[in-house]
Length: 134
Image (tube, rainbow, N blue to C red; front, side, top):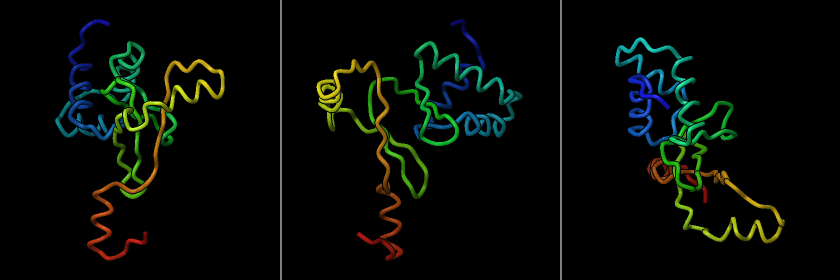
């Protein structure tokens, strides 16, 4: 993949925003920085970087794809309150892929495991408002 100034700008925004942004989120940041980049260019560059393995494209979390600069195998957690996406180290349950292969006989080349719930920050906000039910 050839060097592209726009692609590097997009990658830097992706690294700085570890909430697994969508193309639209990155585009909004670029627009606020007075960039003249188009949304189509953002999508094209994100998809190129994902195809080359430089970043990870995460589909199926929501209607639109999200992107992750962390290409190591890991799990995700989506907060049902604020919608943020967090990484969870695969060492939390390192045997899950091995056990899935053993039980099914499948060969698993990659995976996307997603947990849904409420993040620590939202729990604290709810505790402050005395609204949490556990």
